[in-house]
Image (cartoon, rainbow, N blue to C red):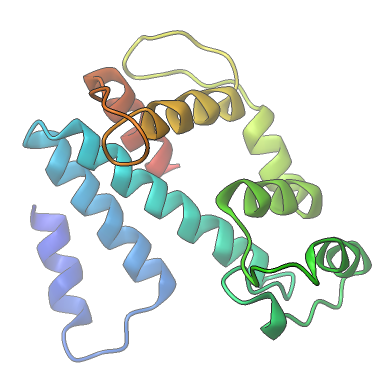
Length: 164
């Protein structure tokens, strides 16, 4: 809680940056984990992950929330943008944002392919594989489309990924 209070004090009276908001989301996720609210923990992680993806895409001139405001200079980014333009929604879905950033950013691609050592001790595999499992856990939970509870292990692993 002290870390979150330091962040709030620092931001008081200032314009919060994306990084500040992402840090605040992580603090909130950790607080919900401590309170035993694992569904809330995972929901906050997914919001943090979405913010991370959107921030990464902005570096390539892609505005994931409003594709019409995008101005990519990178030829690959421009081709990706052309591939999704002209459709009903001017926004990228979370999956589309993830796919686009993976195509554009070699560091992000390497991160997703890197081994994941879960603090929960549950499984292993790659970061990308664990993200997919956590996406399914979220989608099956009351926070999205289902009724299943989120496990402590899934919430703990999402906190660990959120720090990365």
